[in-house]
Image 1 (cartoon, one colour):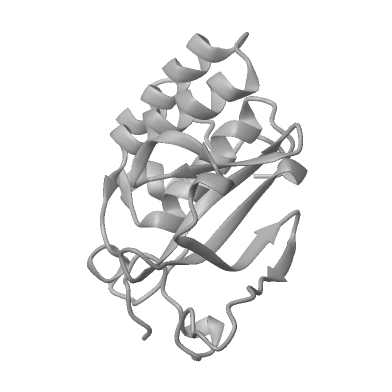
Image 2 (tube, rainbow, N blue to C red):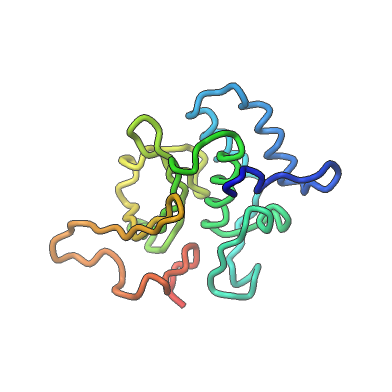
Length: 182
């Protein structure tokens, strides 16, 4: 992903999903960063079919590469986020401005992963569960657990008093998109 070629394919060997993303690139090449975020979010959301890792890879949790997601044209929430990151990077967005965030959705009561992109001091969330790209401040039910940005991992915390936000299980047992630990 770092060289910006994670979603490249040779002529005639592009999956339908990769070709659709490439068409989106041509439409947004001169667009604002917000328009690029919106276009990539909608394009990936409508091009890739949601499928749980257990159904696709026969394991509880698997973080697919952009090429794997494009080839299968399906993935779970972190696969959507990784593909969106690769697509935005290929279109010129700096990887240092993006992070994959694993969170607990308090409203729906499950673990989830999204792409967060920093733009002018705001963090915008690209989510496979909605086409609209929103600032993180508009998503109060999303409680970040950890994120991966620029090759580093970050643990997040929250001040909740005595209220428990998510289960006290080890983070490596959290399977985003599955709703349960394995």
